[in-house]
Every structure is written in structure tokens, then in C-alpha cells.
Image (cartoon, rainbow, N blue to C red; front, top):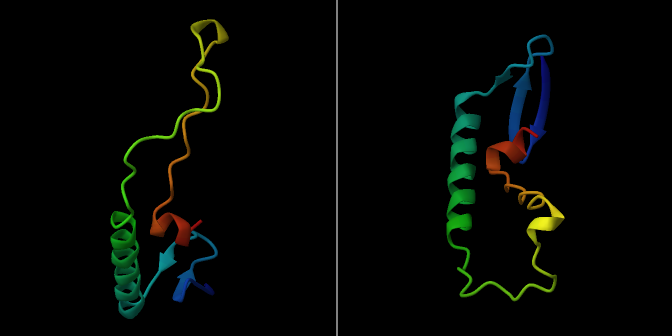
Length: 81
């Protein structure tokens, strides 16, 4: 069993199966941190209009639409990354 701390949460991880184990207090702390993180994300101000692009619009001859934007990780993905 390997023990480490990430973002103030004490995590035990099995070295063979890589399973993650939390005690009840750590789980409650994790749930509270996730709730707080989600609340902060929902309070972000909405943009009124997108900014004008400073690049030319792609044409069909250029092929493809480019890479899709990266999805922002949520709290749990950041914790176990």
C-alpha cells in the first residue's frame, strides 16, 4: 500500500492493482472540495459576445476544421491525474 497526500486529501493506493482507498473522513473532505470547486465554476461571469477573430476564416480548400478545444478537467480529474 502506498500512501500520499494530494490537495489536502490523504490517499492510500494499492501498488499491485492501483486501487484507491479513502477513509470516511477523507471521502467527506473530497465531496466538500468537489462541491466548492463546482460552485466556483458556476459563478464565472458569462461573456456577452465573443471577441473578433484575429485570423482569417478557414476555407473548405484548406481541409479540416482544426483541433477541438481541450476540455477543462474537473476537480476529481485534477486530483487523480
